[in-house]
Amino acid sequence: MTVDIDPLTLAMAPPPGESPQDRETRLQNEREAKKRSDLIDQELSRQRAQDKKSLKPVKILLLGQSESGKSTTLKSKRLAYHPAFKAERSSWRAVVHLNVVRSVRLIIHALTEAEASASSPTPPGPDDPIYPALTPELLTLKMRLLPLQQVEEALLGKLTPGGAFKERPSNANGTGDSLSPLTNLPEDRREVAVHSAAPWKGAFSRLMNNVRTSVDGPEIAEPQDSRDARQLLHACAEDMVRLWNHPIVKEVLRVHRLRLEDMAGFFLDSIERVTSLSYEPTDGVSEHHFSLKAGNMVPQSWIVYDVGGARVPYFDDMDAIIFLAPLSCFDQVLAEDETVNRLEDSILLWKAIVSSPLLKETSLILFLNKCDILRAKLRSGQQFGEYVVSYGDKPNDFEHTSAYMKKKFTMIAKQHSPEPRGFYTYFTSVTDMQSTADILGSVRDMLVRQNLSRSRLV
Ligand SMILES: Nc1nc2c(ncn2[C@@H]2O[C@H](COP(=O)(O)OP(=O)(O)OP(=O)(O)O)[C@@H](O)[C@H]2O)c(=O)[nH]1
Image 1 (cartoon, rainbow, N blue to C red):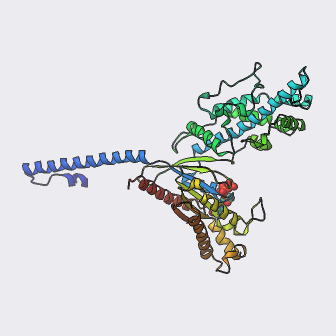
Image 2 (cartoon, rainbow, N blue to C red; image 1 turned 90 degrees about the vertical axis):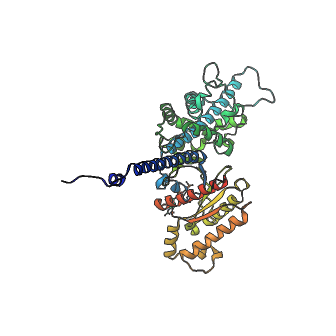
Image 3 (cartoon, helix red, strand yellow; image 1 turned 60 degrees about the vertical axis):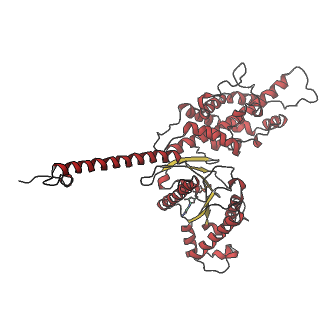
């Protein structure tokens, strides 16, 4: 007969022939070992709870000239799109749309003033504006666009918590014609604007309060009223384009001294694009939240700000800047200015960023990117020194050219940083999602260590 005894039971079994005294000693030892083990467990969970509190999110600013690989970096395997990202996109779209309807409202308001002045029984005084006469076609356009006011309400509802702006001024017939120009609006309503750093921060922090989720959070569906708003905007697109391009409207705006094109959030020249049903906003600051977890560590939250385009942004409180410099573009020129070499432009942007006093305490992480394309170009015989004259006739291979560029970027960081700061470089091909995810993992570890040592925890 066989007895099925598992090895653990066997190991824990009292030794054969154990005396009552030995048994008591053994049990006492076991009780003490258990007590120690429980204490260790308690300490570990206390530390974990403490870490959870002390681990601030890592805040990263993602920068680089257009086409340098910013979006691709964000798409790397472990940072794949997730619900919060979608929610932010749709909120950003709401901000763009809000700016469109708001601009249209201002035009309608100016037309109403022009109409009122034409029908006024008293002749205009010497200081009164002289408006051109409005055509019946324009008056019809104006009527047709009035329903857009509801869109503005819906969008404001989406962007501001708790419908804070329900009590907006409106005239007796409810058309909103009596609204004052933008400059007379309450401060917090003017804030929902784009192309201007400060208002953006306000608008986005409000958005984030509304839509912030974690990686594990639920998917946020676009609300019905916001979808209706998009449909209505789309349906009105043609009328809005006609209104904005109408020569009499231009003249009325001139007399009214309203220069919409100078205002934050000007999108009237892009009505067709931004009101298309498939419009996905790409312009402006977007904020990406996710959390990365390694082994047993507490998940580390990341916030990555993608400013888009080649501007030096105004952000404080960042842990690091990831700057993407595409090395492979040594033989290309800028689309907007064919006299400027793209690699040279990247160096200039780098110089501007590292010299910025506003970002002086932020660590720099340089991704010398598109290394795979650089390799392929050099292998096919493209001569690096022909475009980067200072390179001279050094060997035309990846090792030498990449090392040369690393040295150049490093020198600039050393010479132009207002204060000594953390500086790390990586050669990257961010289309290789796995290796980018690994590099971001190292960046995270490095920043976590940096944060911990700053707060004297290690
Ligand atoms: N082969 C290769 N292609 C890359 C690499 N990085 C980016 N690309 C490609 O370059 C193009 C531009 O990359 P994006 O990530 O869109 O660049 P971006 O910086 O977000 O560009 P903007 O949106 O214009 O600011 C895309 O087609 C990418 O697939 C790389 O390391 N290797």
